[in-house]
Image 1 (cartoon, rainbow, N blue to C red):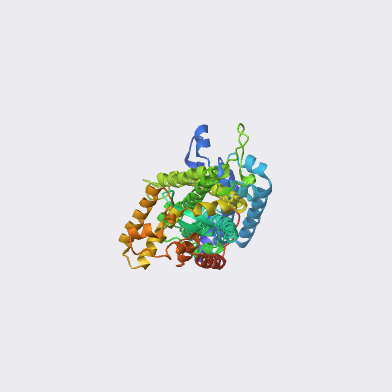
Image 2 (cartoon, rainbow, N blue to C red; image 1 turned 135 degrees about the vertical axis):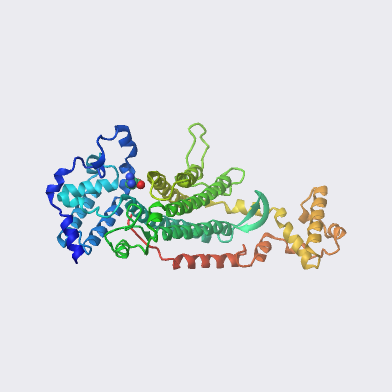
Length: 492
Ligand code: ARG
């Protein structure tokens, strides 16, 4: 109690003290000369970190409330500060001109709010920053941003997964040539191919959740680097802001940007998956393949060649992936070699992450529309899947069932293929006598069992391409998607 009244005594919100301030910078006292104009512009971050304003205000609210039990704020001062913060928040939402004009000389989002508070409350506005530093504020705001951002991306990814599931169900039984090294390998179902992409995107959701969990720790109370001398209730602030826990070390708390790296890694992985999907669809849309018809709504034409329909949506998705990975590498480079503690270099963490977030949102939205409106050419896919070469492995498996060791069976089918090539016929058209000359293990039932349908049906292990396995995979994927609870937050 004694300490409480001492603190109160030493920190009056007496407007008389206000007149002693020479400028409205947050740190001008020890400087004789004003900053160089180029440098002032160079160091400002309000142009981009204003995006953190809703989070800054949320942290300010929590901080204002935490200052009362330790005797810095009276109940009335808390009320006044909260009301002013509310006013600033509302005005910022509706009055963009105010952000431009009033924010014109704000150094960053933290300075902006302090300036606005002082305008509303006089000297009381300067009290809120008691015991705290922008170093912990920016780390806290940015963590809150990443948590909401990850949840926003998860939302749109779920819509992409829905688009995949619809196409999977609409194309459940269409066969296509499965490829490795871009060479015909074995028949698969188109639905199985589409589920392969969907499966990759579910891992992206897990990575997003990991990034959000990594951001879910509250630095407030870490001060500039050393902690807080006013016995501020750190867990209460964390709870108020929705964090699950507080950071364990004040120095680490102002240095750590691992949550941003985790988020950029999640975005990069996702963009890489989108890029691979794009590549598949660009190839499948080519005249040589004609596996799918590009939707008009997501294609462009040529200014010169009237016949052209170009897969620009997929090419742009593939192309923009470079920027996303670039953002991850850029932040890794910024962090590399920084001493432990806050360094101003850390201000470089935000712009590229904001841009990567926005870009991936657009990429997923376009991919979702394009996937949903793509028409697959089932007839063409079936014809391509009927290439007898795709059944060579099945033929070797037939010999295995006849008791021949696989390596020998492989060799025998190789010889069959060579013989067919010599006769210039399809190997499936070779007469039984010709086959028997190569191996007596061939019987009359050999040709009968060789079909795309039989090859597909045989792959009935879980995760295989047999229709029954694919049906089970759909149910499994739907189950996993429905089980996930989506955390919704403020729009980042
Ligand atoms: N604008 C800075 C950032 O984004 C936060 C301010 C910390 N500035 C400082 N000189 N300690 O990281």
